[in-house]
Length: 324
Image 1 (cartoon, rainbow, N blue to C red):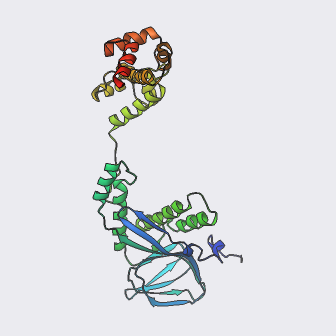
Image 2: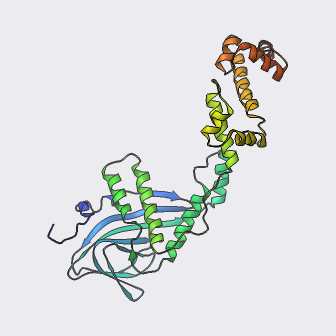
Image 3: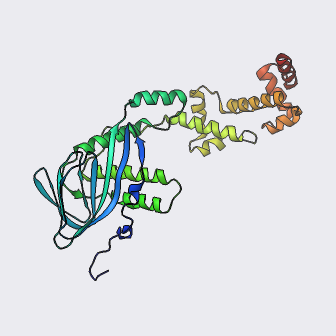
């Protein structure tokens, strides 16, 4: 490197400029299909001119080194290191590198199409099948991002939020054959799009993240903890501490959600597991009682009779006779 010359962090791509162009990366984000057509680094010698041309897809031009000008809409816009601009779809433009300095450019050509099936229909199908892998908020973000990309002004701007870093992330994932390489490249491209929008001062509006019903969420956490730990001693305070609320608040939440008192719920869980063991095994009732969280067989007999009106032994016998 010559004295005073700035280090180009993308120089390591030299000779491998078009490695990512070999990949046919297609993915879905929200209601849109994305296909990466070109994803590469190129160097412009001083004074190099690329005559007027246009593309049907979106083309992002990031400048990690050097300077030049771009002509769009009959206007000439200077740019320099750390800036980027967007051309396309169908934006005629002409590029010129500086006569003395030249420049490098990171290019992303990406085709974005609206997919046919409305998100609401897809979400309904996902709900019915239980496959909620794509949340509504993500689809809203994709829609908002694409809409704003189409509205970006045709002028270069500073890469204030590091969209250019997406090139490095994608290339390193490919070069190192990282686990989850495809997902890493996909997310790198999405970040390029989002950060590009943000750089122009285009902030997300209208999209909102899904929120939880906190009481229902706490019930879910509490019941999951009870299901995993009912075999041993377990108290209201134990569970409340795990989900960072007071015992009194947890007790109220259980009652408000129709689960009865905390102790009633734990007892119900244990009795359900006892019934399963009575029918599925020949284990003695004394051993089942201790394995399912009851302090003794006598206590299990008392609780079981109170709940079902019969002893555990009679329950086992009656249910097996019914199954014959």
